[in-house]
Length: 224
Image (tube, rainbow, N blue to C red; front, side, top):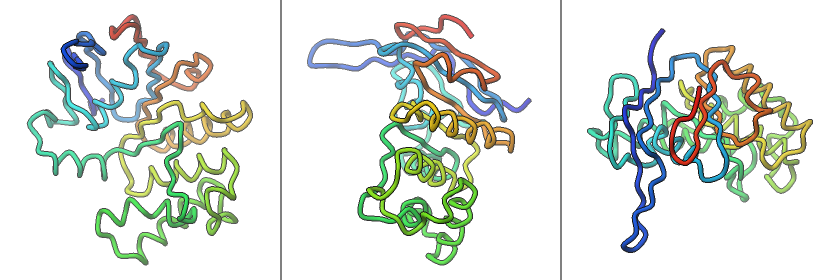
């Protein structure tokens, strides 16, 4: 198996005035290509911090994080931005769509930051919206969509640059049970097609589709 992500004795300490607040305390783990990983723990366990580090949104205070063969602490900010733009797709609980853009435009937006021509990015966005079952909602604004439809747009947006890794932070947190189940099935289908999924959640029911479960408590690994 190919190791995509490796954490070695990773610590993260936040400084609030003169106080140090540890969020992660020596985490070591590996994630392989094609894994469906559930990173689970209660609020304050450090799971979102771990996701931010894996997603190159933040840097560790101590320890090593490897994305493929790259130690990310040795990469420049422009290199990290390229990784975030091309290799990792992000799905958040709060959706983060641009209210003034249509579903189609929201999905295509990350490709604009990669300087992809407009025609190509809109074609790709249409294909992805069809894939997530929203072919009849492409011209709708986020305010005209249901919560489940908005999350499907967010998933399509996460896929627009064909990333290897999908990071999903509580992707069903704002959805009813039935819609949440549909979103989880969509993530499972993406995993079956070869995407590596890292699901961050506090809900044990969402771990059923994962092939690897990593449990955090008080910033430490407590089981997997």
